[in-house]
Length: 281
Image (cartoon, rainbow, N blue to C red):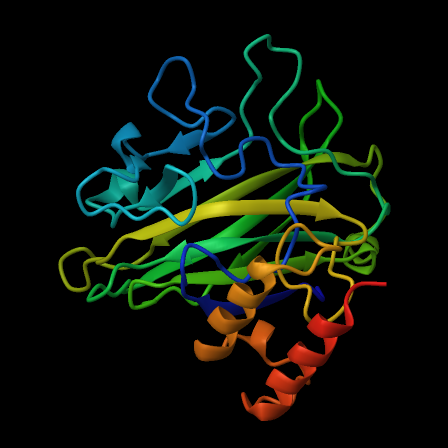
């Protein structure tokens, strides 16, 4: 399939980060994990596979990492066969049982883009694991069967304690390539996951991975008015855009490579200054 993934390291400057997608149009419920479920010690709208509720972390927890707000989720290394597969999922019922928390999907209604951020603490390395974001396209309830799924690995061996951006695009062409097997998918389960397939005696898994600020959009992705409009609110050029550019440029994030030549130099700065001073139309 023609799905693709893009990753980029982002650092924080004065509380501002380079933001690729607006939260507007994000169909994930509780995408930043800020709202806790009334019971169970988990984020509202999210279920867990073989993960203790203690891995729903707060900014004040010792050693924990949170990209924005006060909460995030993590996946620790497996400790035995029962935890070879670990993950989080939107595929759980709403409190009234009427539907699932999975975001809606319109069959052939436009490309699906899923993005977010992950982090491996400085000095830690994820070894011998598949770390991935899985999308399960599901049929209309009460069927809920999986029409098709895609699992895309992220390069999470280590991030040096910095949040790393990822982006997955699943196109209408990808869906057509699956074949025509109605009834068609009407929702998508979002699953950050980790799987250890090795031998615990000789190659035990190591390291912890954190996830935060996930986004699911179908169709056109909201964007800025010009190359300098890098941060929300889009359509307005302000201090947030300056901070976002400085962050991306100094960390050699692709968002700071405004002429897309792979080099971070005066040409990119000139583009930013000209577009910023020119203003939005």
